[in-house]
Image 1 (cartoon, rainbow, N blue to C red):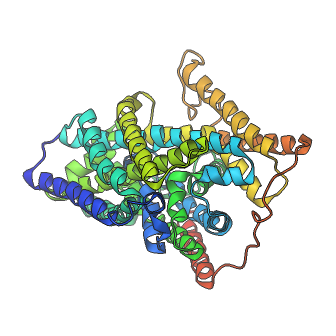
Image 2: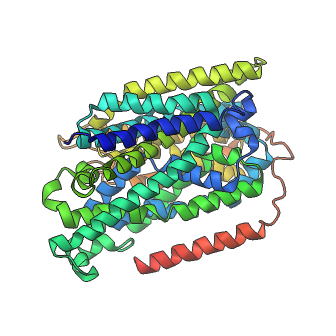
Image 3: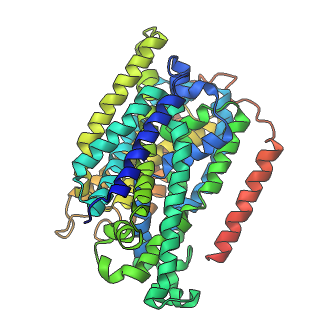
Length: 532
């Protein structure tokens, strides 16, 4: 624990105030209409979309969790970032054309157009709960843990300060405020994380590491391999990681309102696709500036950190960053948590207005929609602040959030994916897949967590549980959800009410979109060749 120097404190305060001012200023013109507030007036361009996708994804969970995972296991956890590049291409080429051409405001609305209102309600509930308990709550807690370790600031006070600062511009300014601040926060995130990585590299000679070979020997060569690792030690194979993450990734990048809302606010289909591809390029970076610091910490501070692996990032900040630079890194941490929270708040407000209140069949005016959106955003923020301090009792942060996502993500992916690629799926198939698939996954999670096996409480990732790692469970749940979908569709005699215009003819992709996509794929293949 340390005290905040006046210089660091000044940097932190200036950053918070700057984000509030920029957020309020950027949203001033478009906050007075529902379309402007919730969808940024359909004016977003590729650069803003891509940076916003990156920033809303990179929460403090990533900064803390990836550093911890790098310390414990190495680059293998970087696959969670690199796989995202391919999943963003799926968003760009498969889902964006449907989303933009059906002119939806929310993803539950998309399910209603493809299936019926029941699926819309179920997905809206899932999405609101995910934003409240995971996107916002976990981000709050992860950020507060770091601030407590670095400055001794109580977790609850950290959460309140971050929540109020973020809520001011996110709730008042709407989507435009959120995406503009996220674009700036992307820069702060990258600069702060890159600075910490460089300082750690320059510190290596002080512990006798002067070459790559010496570094490789100090950290164990397996920590620098993205593919080759011992499944008996890790508890999962590379294929578990590949297929499990594919399910989670399609859910997160292609069907989660918190993320996809940026694409829905695009000026055009091409801008949405380019934004997704730009985010794919940005997702290459976290392995080198977030996972690598954890590996460097293993070489530098293994004895100091010991078994307290959550302290990896705070330890590096305290031991490597001088006064002034600590303020910069805290600004980066604030950028991470504020961007994630702002994105989730905005998506929650949108879902509540369009998928809850509009379903009540009232003819709300723009003024009423704005009022409902802001009040609901404030209530969600208060609930998240109240809930997040209890997360510390639930297990490892990075794995926890993915385990919880794996409860409902497989069934959502099955409904979206098969609903887009095939016309045969019925409304009943969608509804029973969402309910049944999620119910089965939730039962497994609760059994492993709360019913002691051999006298030990377990998590999904624990070998003491059912013996199936949560990554493998994720794609098993997807297979189960798919079987439910196919069986119900096969035996369902109800007629499909899909509008004829739903399956629009998809023209060939723009040349720039195609070339940039191929470049991204080539770069990723080269990276995997190097770290195989």
